[in-house]
Amino acid sequence: MLKNQLDATDRRILQELTIDARQPFSKIAEKLKVSNSLVHQRVKKLKEVGILGDASFRVNPESLGFETCAFVQIRIRQAKFMKSVVEKLTSVREIVECANIAGRFAIIVKIYAANNSHLRDVVYESIQNIDGVEETNTVVSFETNFIRNIDVGL
Image 1 (cartoon, rainbow, N blue to C red):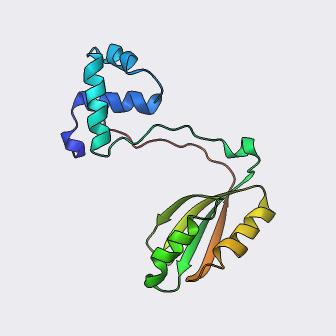
Image 2: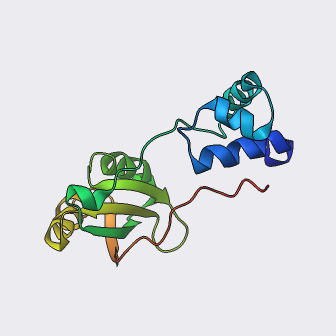
């Protein structure tokens, strides 16, 4: 299913779920003036084709004592190390996101650390010691201004 295969009902269901993923399907059905079973069927279809993932809660890292957020760009020595480096990065518990990027650096990771000293330890001891990592560049984030889902194009 591609974007152009989504009808208005699919888009409205997606919009409602991105506003509040915990709202009952019956409430969505009422807002959209459709049957509850239609909403269930559409959500099931959207999950099956991979448009919708499972709903989850966002944990506030600061409330758990993680005061430092940073993005670390990672340069790989050779392309053959990419898979093994990414695999090793998954075991670094402070890394919450990892993306393959274009340019001088091949990977960017998002890290939450207790403080700058903890961040330094993660970068120097956990990331730079991975075989195949040639260089890192760390950018500290002062704050996250917003996080949102992709616009479903209503």
